[in-house]
Image 1 (cartoon, one colour):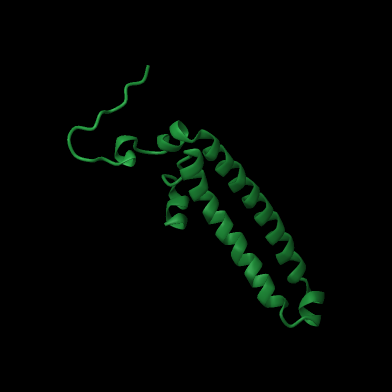
Image 2: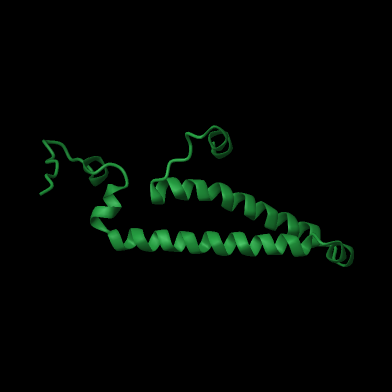
Length: 110
């Protein structure tokens, strides 16, 4: 049986009593699982969709006949870069995979 810390005296918050990601896994495990699944779905859909969009809008034929193609391509490339960097934070906070100690990832994510 797990013993829970008992607050002594002052009012302590639940975050002080249960530090780390254990709070979500202990009290609302279904919400944590739902959050993990939705983050994975959004990352996959966003990376695939924005990659395809940037490939299509950066073609010479699209750039020649459409004046806003460069703008849309830049937006999709920006979203791909953002989602790649955000996936590092999602791995750290949602899945407890710490990649920040690696030499290159530390400089990119900070």
